[in-house]
Length: 264
Ligand code: KIV
Image (cartoon, rainbow, N blue to C red; front, side):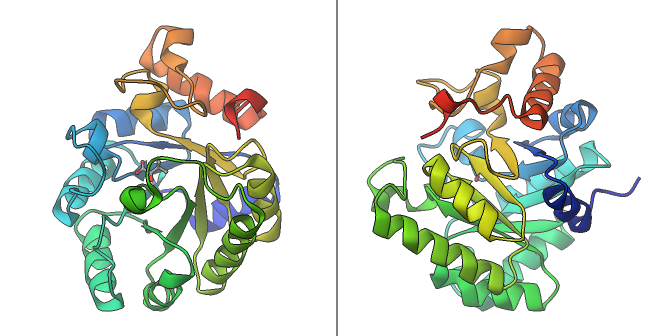
C-alpha cells in the first residue's frame, strides 16, 4: 500500500477536511493508529520524556529517532510519517542534511520536523532543495525549554504574535511543507492557518488549525503528572485503546476536539 502523500494532505487543507495526527514510537501503536484512521504519525522527540523517562527532549539522539521511526514505519502502511530532528542535530545546514538523510534512508521517514523560526530558514531551504520535505515547528519549542523558562504559552503579546507570523511566512517561503504550532493563542493560530497555504497542525493552538496533534501517551492518560489543559484523556471516555484512538480521530474530524476550554 502507498502511504498518504503531501499532495493529499494539501488537498485536505484546501477542502477544509481536518487532519488527524498523533505521535507514535513503535510498530504496535503505529498499526493501531492506522486502524483508527490517523492520517499522519509524528515520531516525536517527546519519546525522550514518555519512552525514555528523561526530564526533557534534549538528550534524544539521531540514532534514537532512527530506531523508533523504523519501528513505526514497519507497523503501518498508510499514514504519512514525520520524524523529529533532535536537539542540535540541525545546528548547521550540513549537519541537518546528513542527519535528515539518515532519518529518511535508515528510518523511512517521509518528512523531518525542525523546531525554530526564521533563524533556521536557510537550513529549511537547503533541505527542501535536496528533496527532503520539512515540517516547521513554531510557538512553544520544547528543545528551547531552558531558554523559554518552562513549557509556557507563546505569542500572547502583540509583538511576539507578529514575529511568529513573520517566521511562519519565512519558513513557508523557504520550502516548508507543513507547520506544527504548539501552545499559542487560538486567535493567532487561526491567523497563521489562514495566511499559509501549507497545512498547519496545532497542539494547544485551538480549533481553527488544519489538523490536530497530541502526544499519544497524554491522550491515553498514561503520562504521569498533570495533564496539559489542551489535551484530553480519550481512554477514560471510551475504555479501550482502539476506541480511544477512533474517538480522537472522529472528534478532530468533526471539530469537537479541541473545545474552547482546551485552547488558550
Ligand atoms: O515531540 C513531539 O511529540 C512533538 C509534538 C508535541 C508536536 O513535537
